[in-house]
Structures are given as structure tokens and as C-alpha cells.
Length: 253
Image 1: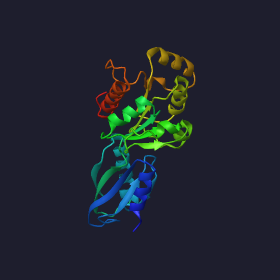
Image 2: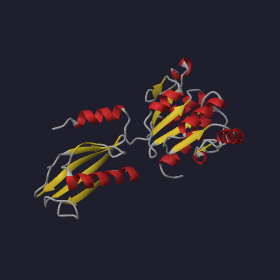
Image 3: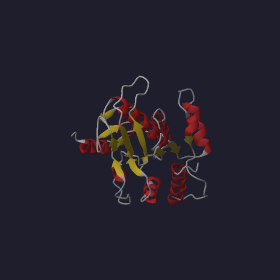
Image 4: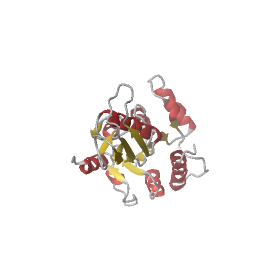
């Protein structure tokens, strides 16, 4: 038996989205029996097998649907002759479970608003990755223990991060408007469900003008980020951003 538990642990540490396919029932002549497992990645890469041939083909197709819909599923595959496929004649049932599907928030900037946002979102579904190269801010005592801190330059993090258009959320709250623009320019080529940047409408107009013509999809950027609640303090702004992030995650906007 292959070591699927170690593989899942490796994918968890890499924050890699995957589908775990398990044979939950088999009747008649089938290539694999109850308990056989296969792990599928969004790009179609897979580890292990549920039997090759027909069952593997349909397991990969069903896993793709799980990625599209971001939810698990079950399916029943009768292994009679199907077109070009030779078949065993039995029946297999699969259970497909999404792994590492927790929404990830890549939060650039550990300043007052960034730390407040970490506090407000603590206890929500978001797995927060806080990125800042400044010692005194990334090590702030007010940052919840659940937050994953990255004491690094934003470019290094962006280059090595796992990106997924279904579960990756980005907020850009750095200490400087020009840095915000640089982070945004490097983030936009990557798939993400939400990209938000702090700033005024005039700031966004300037950033949009600077980035125009670079082939970036600026239409998906939320700037100013957050729901307008009239607040000006770091905590109030953090609450407005958290509200928009949760509304997007829950399909309310």
C-alpha cells in the first residue's frame, strides 16, 4: 500500500489544494477494492490509483468537477463497456474529498490595519498568511497565534506561494502607496478569487493609469478595499475589509 498519509501531509505543508478519491464500495469484477485511494491535483497530476483505465478516467473527471465547484462529491461508475474503453463488468463507488480547501488570505503589510484585520478574522474560515519584511511589525505581539507570519520580501513570497482562483484572497495594506502598486503588479498575473488594495479613489486612478497597458486585469481589483462603513480608525477599516472578504467567500458578492 502506498503511503498516502505522508503525501497528504506533504500537500498540507505546501498548502496545495487536492482531491482525495477513495473507493467506498466495489461489486463484481473491479481492478481495486474498498479503501483504494488516489490523490488528484488541480492540474491533473495524480498519485496512487483506483485501478487505471475506466475507473481512473472517471475519477479524474469527477475530481475536476470538485475543483470547479469547490465541494466534495460521490459517484458510481459501472464498468461495462463504454465506447473505446475495455471494462471489467463490476461497479465502483467513489467518495471525493477536497483537501486543503480552506480559503487563504495573503495579507501584505503588518501595520496597524493589517494587525487589526488579523484579529478581526481570527476564528473565521480564513487561513491568514501575513507578509512583511519589517522586524518590528511582523513580530507584533498583537498578531494572533493562528496567523502564519512570513518575514520576507513580498516578491519572494509571491513567487513561492500557492495560488488558486477558487480559494486565494489577497489584501494589500503596506506602508507605502508605491509599494502597494508594486505588490499589486506582481500579484495580478496569478490566479486569485479576490484582490483588494487599500487607498482612495484618487489613489486607485493613479495606480490604474500607471499599470495601464501592462496586460494586467485591473477590473478584478477592489480599491478602495472594504465595505464603506464610514470608519477611519484601523479597527473600523479592518472590520470593513473583513466584511467584504467574508461576503465574497460566502458567495454574497
